[in-house]
Length: 81
Image (tube, rainbow, N blue to C red; front, side, top):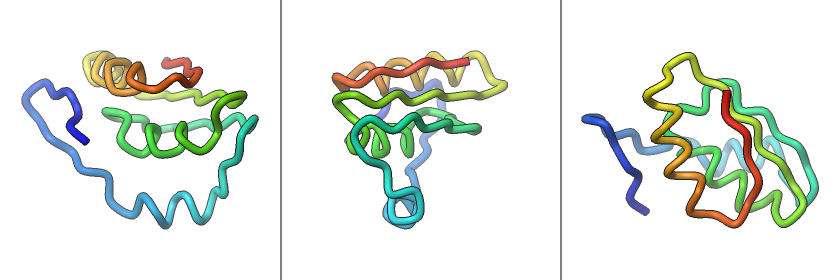
């Protein structure tokens, strides 16, 4: 999957390990405290839909716009701060 960028590329690493640890399921509410460009968040959203919610936080406003573009490709519900 290609992710939109603003001059940088980040490939999620340990995504399967994160999913195995969190064991996200439909209906879960998950907080991603370092959402970045949304790579891990996208994988999590695939698991928590259709009733789940992903809340993403990042201090970088520009990267939040990238995360918004990335996560908008899913039918899932998310909020970014």
